[in-house]
Image 1 (spheres, rainbow, N blue to C red):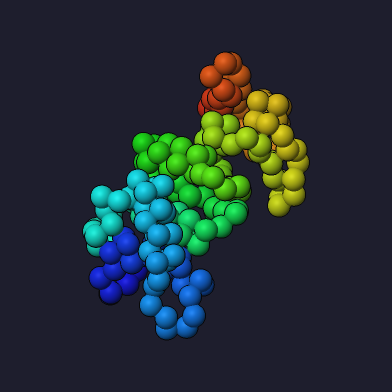
Image 2: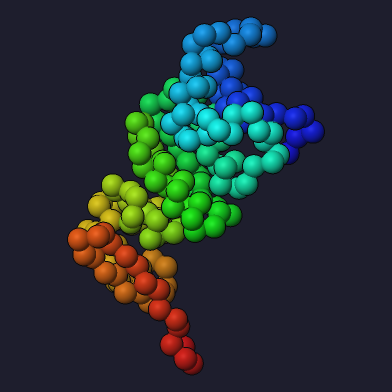
Length: 171
């Protein structure tokens, strides 16, 4: 949080700071990178809105735009859907999966991982247990072993889906 009234364009522009000399004003390349990042994330209509007026999903998109303004080859995102409603989770993951950079995303939601990730790495106690395509890796046995819960895993032409089951009574 900040007391400064930053616009979305200002926040995205902060991604360009590493590309400029100290105290230098933004140049044409900086303005173009910010414009492209706003366009890529669908935030052009929000560019002049104040940061503090944005919803959680809009703020997450602005943070991704700020990262894109840096013109990276890779993005590392830690729980980017945290605190977002289902609609914004799906929109954000759709945006991330369509980016022209390699994205490594830490997610706890197995269904989001299955829907949007080309490859998953399942961790237990900070160590990789298995990795591969979601449809090959996510199984009822693995979920029981790693997470200690029962689930049904359905794989069809539409993808892989995990349905968690309630604990058995008395168990």
